[in-house]
Image (cartoon, rainbow, N blue to C red; front, side, top):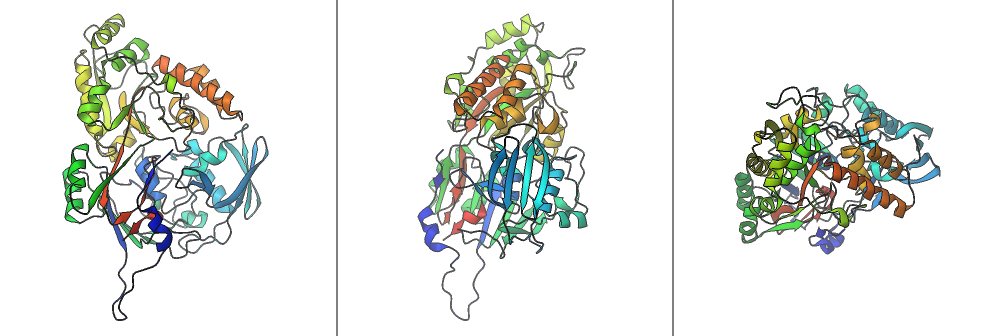
Length: 530
């Protein structure tokens, strides 16, 4: 997987060097000011499995292993790891690491973070769910025992951030913030990680300030000393802030503004592929939909209805008119570049509204029906516009959509509580592997985070069996064949309706050098302001 690095060669020589200043002139703090259309909803790294929050919190907190600039697994809080038995992984922890408050990092913090991440209210159980037990060998050695062979365990840990047992206990933050129930604690607004930046101040929805962790154990390629993050929901205001010089970088850039920014002296738009797949989900479990005029039955339990919705959506029109060409239509729940992607399966059903009407009629809905659709309006570029387009297309086959487009702050608690009948969501596999999407989005909801984000409760026993085998298979050819088989069954079932992958578009000053990853992560330790 390739991604773009701006002026990366300049990073090597710069290091942390500051420009020369006169003896009587104090050195200026290097401040990186950036804006996003939404906010990181919490500083609690276990509270919400959402890209922006995990990316932002990933500058404060760290996992045992992490992805480098080439999306390869490299050491973080663990220095090395190996399988000592089919169900045992031994991790050696990094020594002489401290949390931001000066507390030493030890095995006890990992064990605490494991119990916290798999406990009530956690939104990241999927990353630790296959771990049955952790055995402490000593303060810097741990054995992770899984409930079966699990060769991909290190890959799964890249989004599991380690917290301080001492700090969480003293601040009554032993349990994660629970967005579904509206439960907050100290970890919502304060933070204490081991990462290259520490939290200085937090004003939710307005401004969050990070400053350099001067005691960081690792290498920092950039020269940024302070990060000022401002959520700016209005796209026009966000673009204006960049053009006026109020901010150094913003994302996402609306497609209609890319040419304008590129034509502005001193500015540019960095575009690249994203591994996130946007899709639609439908409640396939309840006997009666929560938000529909159809009483006593659930239309989405009928494959013909799901297929009608699929064939009513003109994905090429969405690509041309909404995304302005900056999307890749998909028939799969994973993107090209994700391990296990099978191009032979990536063929969408045809856009055919007449066939959709017939399917609805055959299913007993000749006049269609009405249903609510939940959609975020501050998470992805054009997210609300995509939902509006889908609603308009479904109207042509007599399906009336009551569109509920809302901020992430209310959208996530609603859909994660499964208080939805029809919704739009996006997913980037954190492991860059198909198993992540299959386990989180497609598997039947179960223990250990299985199917945690299968919010419509799609279920197929054969798919579940394949997913279980995929996570323990070490032969890559056999594993890839099983991934394709599971994807094909899900595709034929129309378990979800994939839409597309959309391109990243970050607007910035030309004086900014950074690394744009297809995971949409922005790591401040790699940012240089010239």
